[in-house]
Image (cartoon, rainbow, N blue to C red; front, side, top):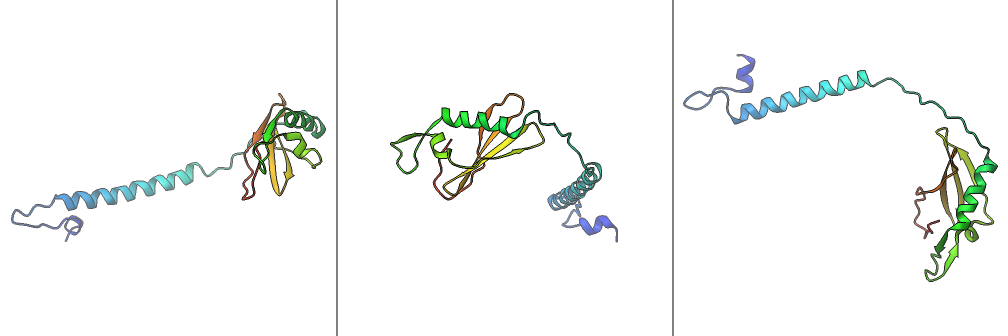
Length: 145
């Protein structure tokens, strides 16, 4: 008995071998074969570790903290306890300790706690542009500074 008889045995009065079932089985097995070949070649071709070049920092932590403080002083936010009151962001973070960390890719991450939630800001090393980093995930009410 041949392999073809296993997949598509002769049936019916005309003994036709190539029907809908044969086409479905063949396309399934070919899809499995090609996807396994794709996965194996992907692992072989793309298994090399890639190392990114480290961009050296041009500033120190104290120079990075000043633009973040200026950014907080310039922005106002509605207080999450009372949405009708608009408060300056700096008044919320004035007494807190800021952590400054260089990220090896040309930017700094500055974070601080306010009422059990850690807030993040990103500072570009060259331009000192400050953006809010939306990494605070919390079940506590948060403010947007």
